[in-house]
Image (tube, rainbow, N blue to C red):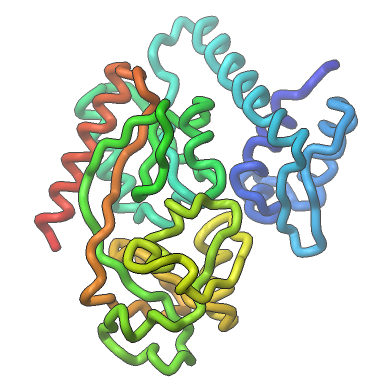
Amino acid sequence: MDLSLEQLEDFVVLAAERHFGRAAARRNLSPSALSKRLQRLEHQVGVRLVERDGGGVTDLTDAGRRFLPHAQDTLRDAARGRRAALGVVGTEPLRLGIPGSPGDHLSPRAWQALVAGLELALPGRCLCARGVPYGQLADGVLTGRVDVLLTTDGVDHPGLVTVPLTTMGRVCLLPPHHPLAGAPTLTVADVADLPMIVEPTASPEWMAPWVLGDLRARRGTRTVEVRARCLADVRAAVVAGTAVTLATDTLPPSARSQLCAPALTDAPPIQLGAVRRRGDDRDEVLALLEVLGLLAALAGTGR
């Protein structure tokens, strides 16, 4: 079987974006061209890897989920081989995982600070951000797809270690036409009876802060399931009036477009942490954790 590295890259990018349009843009292809290349890959592998629908949204089949880590390993091995042939040592980028899509949570300014901080700590070491599906947060770290995952509480596994970074307040994301949209602040009691979005593949522990599950029993919450690959899918559901959702008060303005985001003044803060594999004490991983901790501390003092 003669697999093309380009087609493997197409598949890995599509697995991250879960949307043909966004994946095609990242690959500088049209959606139809990307679809044809994926079909050729599926023909070579001999099994369907992705589910397609008419709206451009996609998901991996069970075979695709099994194939993904092997495709990523093949691409990493190819990159290592090329660097070895060129005599380049130690330049494989560190991979920082972000739930959903990196652009939903990292502003350009925050990303530039991260890259600059790592460059100071480890000159010549590159950093890349990767979106991790909400239902695969623990797996993303355990399988090595990312080296460190930046996320809130709720990613618990004996093979993982979470380093606390900072705490964040909560806001309620509302459509502009909602009766509460004009309020500058809200209380938990104001939103307690509103229907809230639940991503069905995410763990209940990870979803808890976004449906007030840390303050009350889950059965006391009116929830609406929304399959979301990134915050843009959640935002679309809120704008459409499907339900509301909670978010952190650190969301960049681009993630709040078309929405109102009053702060929840009496909701306790939630913990942001960096998750790594237990026993992964590589210098570059520890350096990234130190940079993340420093930037989080600086951001906290600037509030």
